[in-house]
Length: 269
Image 1 (tube, rainbow, N blue to C red):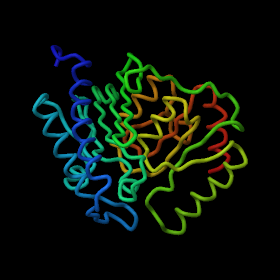
Image 2: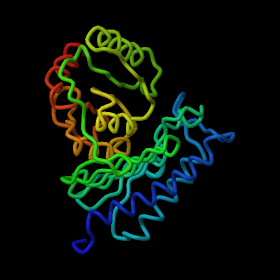
Image 3: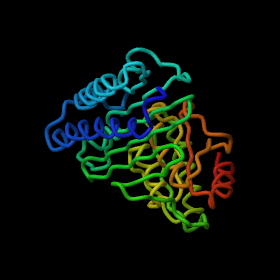
Image 4: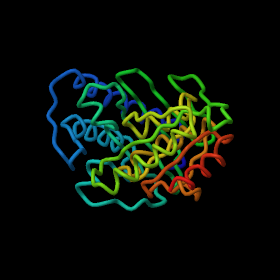
């Protein structure tokens, strides 16, 4: 472990993301084989092909590391996150976007060491945006340093959230209720359909605030967490408590908006 640098971890992850990105790009304009995981939760052949490619690539370079992935973990029961170096992968975040040909799709590859998100790669092959971050070493978009917005007024902030995949009345009502209340507090609201790209949007300042409740799992946030934090962003639980990568709840913003955002989230719940 000691003889491999984090830079090397990043380089191998970028390679894997670019190869998977090629598969996504090739499949993007073709007819897609779609399966339903739930009423609106989709999985495609491309998800599976990408995951296999990424894990094979990483295992070849780092045979002793552990792996958690969206498709494999769902199939084999949740893997516990340990202190071991663990690759946490979403082979295709934004599957619904992919199925519809909406260009917000990405590969997300994160590495945790001692449970701390340490390396992050998020690659959108359709818009050709490669976000990278290493713990303590900054965040980059296509090799250029990025940082969070300097917006300090909630009322001028752009908020991104997601509707999630549950369509029972209770979930839909609480989701639209939050949106309804937030529209009086912020400038406008977006739903991009990709949790990983939302965190990267915070990182490069195109989004000021984001929160999501009940997303798939740590693979949605492992890479984006590194990138957003390295760009000067703050991550926390929507309740205001500390962010937990395994909790399926996340909020993020620039530091200037954090207190007002938490206050707003508390009022809305």
